[in-house]
Amino acid sequence: MTVSRRSFLKIAGSAATLGAFGTQVRASAKGGQVVVVGGGFGGAACAKYIRRFDPSIRVTLIDANLSNYYTCPFSNLVIGGELEMKDIKVSYDALKNKHGVQLIEDHVDGIDADKRTVKLRSGKTLGYDRLVLSPGIELMYNKIEGYSKEVAETLPHAWKAGAQTVTLRKQLESMKDGGTFLMVAPPNPYRCPPGPYERASVIADYFKKHKPKSKIIILDPKEKFSKQGLFMEAWDTLYPGMIDWVNPERGGVITSVDAGSMTVTTEDGDKIKADVINVIPPMQPGRIVTASGLGGDKVWAPVNQQTFESTLGKDIYVIGDSCIAGPVPKSGYGANSEAKIAASAIVGSLRDEEPGVPKWVNTCYSYVSAKDAISVVGVYGLDAENKIIEISGGVSAKGGKNWRAEGVYAKGWYDSIRADTWG
Amino acid sequence: MRCTASLAIACGTLLVLGMTAPAQAAPTGQTIGLTCLACHGDAGQGSGAIPPLVGRTADQLYRALLDFKTGQRPATVMDRHAKGYSDEELKAVADYFASLPAK
Image (cartoon, rainbow over all chains, first blue to last red; front, side, top):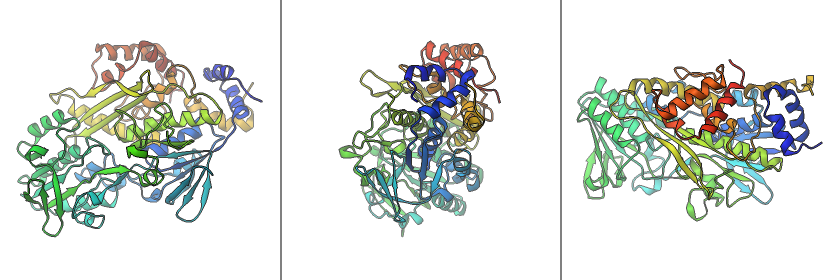
């Protein structure tokens, strides 16, 4: 039995006839197997929503870190001492038990797009009808002389929440009052554009309360940064004189780091010594995207902006930090929003239906102290050439009158997006 | 047609958000509405200080969204959101949330 698109929509449009809708879906659905690689905000939400749109589709989620996953959003509050690691830990139980997503804790080492299989490190091979890649970012340690994954044990990046978050927090706790915290900020594009500056803010709040003679230096290769006016207003108001943001002109570009002497050397040849050094290196797409050539000559994966299907691999969808999504930032909310669009497109494609017209949202809160926050909003749609454009948005009003309210809303945001993604 | 016993569970899942796979010529109320859930609770029930979207009439929701759009109603983020939609889209998303079960 098949259902024409017209009658399908008619039935689907009425909540009162959901019983009929349920019957029709089963009759019209072809099922299929979707494999999702990456269990973050993009991958987990995509897996969940595919199952919610059509429970006849089998969904398998693969991530090497399922039993030890922490959210990057709110990890800065752990670094600032406001939250503990248990507060940002994620459970995959609901995806499995409530939504029927099959979970595999493993690495994906390769994709065979012709045979439509993925190869797991354990040696297993999985077939798919549609593949979703949401692997986030990979840190490029080798772009900074003197830096490596090993050196990151001493000079943490803390840009993937987990053990690195704890390392940086402990270093800040042991630092003496009057010490210097130095952050090496990353070049564009990178995960979470306001993240480095939120981090500096909550560390400043911690210093203000516990180590008020301490200083913060941010060495930045960028001329400007996300929510800059609002961050600087907050820094001047809450922590006058504590944070020194160094732009490229003043020596913000570094050439090397040295963990032995705890110094950073800038392009101008200056050597800056600090007590705690946070090196956030340049970023590239998650390894599976790079390894399978899905970035092409663009590095980040080009995708059909209506569906998030790769323009270089049929039936492979790339969402979240790894893809090119025009003005949508590399954020958890962006990934969650893209996941729903891709989930809808995938369910539609398995039924040979045209994709719907998408619309995305991003809302990112950043704390400027342990209790106060600012936000950036974006509403996105497609232009006539199917490119993603920002239709509306912008940052909070200046003056700080909504800081406390946004600090409270940010907590509601966090609980909600966690539930929407993994709950 | 009615939900048969064997389909009751699947129907129950769908009932939570009135899920369908959207495929229409403009963003549907559901397409727009699903992006609201990242802040307003995973079933629109609200989250902490962020108010619920379910349990209100379509007219209440539409009026609130229009007031956010015109700036008549004070807001932290909702004014920036509401300006991103046509009145028709705001109506569609208001209808979507009004059709969902109140928690």
